Structure formats: C-alpha cells, structure tokens
Image 1 (cartoon, rainbow, N blue to C red):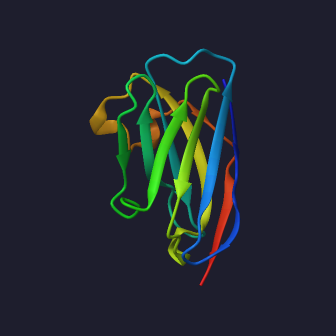
Image 2 (cartoon, rainbow, N blue to C red; image 1 turned 30 degrees about the vertical axis):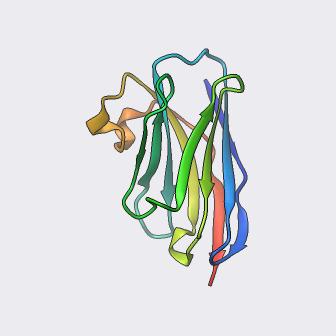
Length: 125
C-alpha cells in the first residue's frame, strides 16, 4: 500500500485548503484512514479519521467545525477540507491507513500501518 498526500500550501489566516490522500496497492474494505499533523518542535497529533466502509468520522477538538474528512471509494482517495485556517494549524500533514481499528483507538498513531510522505500547510497570520 502506498499513500500519496497532496494539496498543502501557503494560505492566509481564515483561508482554506483541501488535502488529498490517494491510496494504491490494495482494495479498501473495512479500513480507516486518518490525517495527523506535526508542527515544528511538537509531537505528531491526530486531526481527523474516517471509517472507509461506513463513513463515520472523528475529529480532534481543535479542528471540529472547521475541518471535514471525507472519502471517495471509487478513487481510493481521502480528503481533508480545512476551512477557517489559523496560524496554529501550520504543520506537516500526514495521511495514514490502518486495518481493524476500534473507535477508541482511531486517534492513536500506533493503529496505522501505512503513512503518506506528508504535505506542508503554512497559515500566515
């Protein structure tokens, strides 16, 4: 499985970006995909996750109401729509894929077996 993340860039505070994560190498069934981010000097943190089959979504409190995760099964692609961006959203964003993840563990990095290369999001204030 390979994950290719794209869509990052430089945007002003209050702006928006949409990240994409295209997966190849395996057919998706009962998996979950998620976005994590890592700011300079900080640990990687969970942003949002989605169950591939049913589409249930989960968010970190810091992005609820501003970010939306979605997926296109036909394209094997997950998206992260980021609105009302803030300077504190600046980070490298990584997509990840994992099998058989229970809800209580969807925000844990250890639940994911495959990771994309990361895409930089910079929000200027």
